[in-house]
Image 1: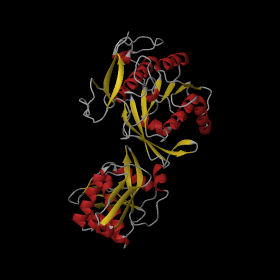
Image 2: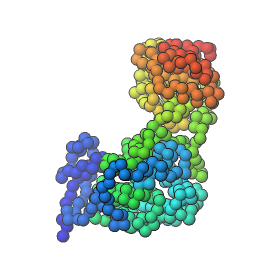
Image 3: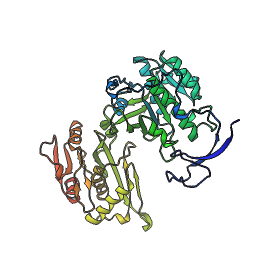
Image 4: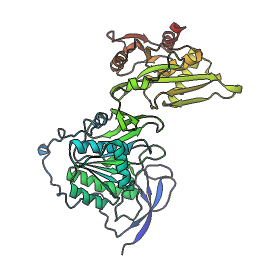
Length: 458
């Protein structure tokens, strides 16, 4: 008879402890140890599990291994293929995470329908919805296909058997937190169950040469729920970003064994599902106000593609002489505070008596240093109540001495500005080459940049 014992497992790294502790002794995270019941005599096979229908592995010389780079198949979405490095690879195991309602299930159902229509059979495993609910969503998205089969099941062993019978090209599991392995005594969603279920799907993907996509929940902090071993085991990890109250969505790769992690996919949420945005810069600037103080355009690099984003600032006197407020949306607060300090110390702007708010239109979250000069010009424009030329963009890193430092990818940024009809751009002097597609103003200090951006508009 199996003997049950109680252990405490870290939800972050999967480490076990015989007693509860406030701080994990392995990853040093606080309040991550949860209680789990383990059967000492259970027959859980763990990561060594391999379905009976999968032939055992044999060692072969590396020179005789078949190159699989040419056997990718498209997901049906150009933006998703861009992030994946060209498409899905047979035998891959991927993990897609994001906030609730962000569009993970919607996108994967669209992918399942497209692959079933173009490539072959797809199995959609749902542990959170009934088949009737899944069909209603598929009808709304126009995703009904004969070769798209679905099953509502959470038992990983039963799912393994179904995969062996159906032999699909692609399997989508929604979500990994609802899956369970019968031999593990802990409930679904626990560290042990997530680890064991992921191990089953890993063996199915590699042994059966089947592409498997797992949907993962995220914690309040925005990281994927479950043990870190889950992220280490998969071939790629994709994150959905964006505000559920806006239509803009970004898919970002934080790990990819088959391609670069510098690419992003951009989508717009609509009644027909997620629609790829072919021209994101035009989409982001479509509602920009004309001649509004505090508004400036910055060519921002997302991976290897330039995006034109609108940075908005609003400075208003602090009421009743209280402490001035500083609030940002979409940018790093510490970086913003540094830019305000440079404006106040080097340029004499009276920001100690001003509430200053900064926003990136479209719900984007930007971290690139090239955004510094755009933030400075936007704040100065709002304080001075002078608008920036709507056909002029700015970019550059601001140093604490007020100097403007060089940034990367200026050629791609300027080409994107020229394509959308911009006439001028303020850039670091060290980035000026002389063959730019539009008029550039090379600046060495923040004072020069503000004189060009604001003084000519007075």
